[in-house]
Length: 121
Image 1 (cartoon, rainbow, N blue to C red):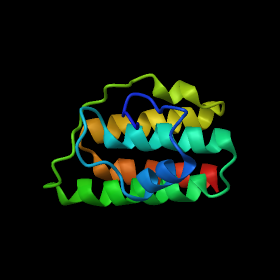
Image 2: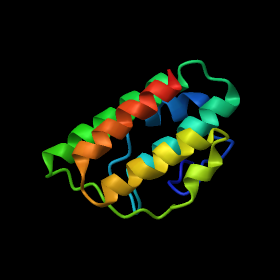
Image 3: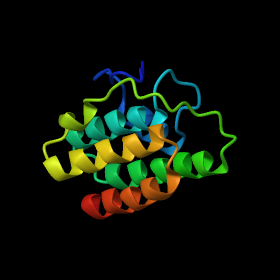
């Protein structure tokens, strides 16, 4: 089962990829956090297209946030999840991106999203 706070390692790769393609709508925390955890699990498993699916899912959620009527939560329930990645720069980009989302600053968040994409590609 996929939980936003953690990813069960028994979840199939196919389900994780599906989650990245169709981001979760209802959540207690940021839905982006669920994508982050799924991405890290897929990367750990060696999935070659994990970064591409992750960025695509983030872009989808970001478009919904820019509309303003998406109903996506802005509460970060996992403020330290940026430490789950070995690359400290990527971790700091992720942390900054989430801070922008929580402050409803979609413009700067879009710039950070482009930076995250460049780090992953």
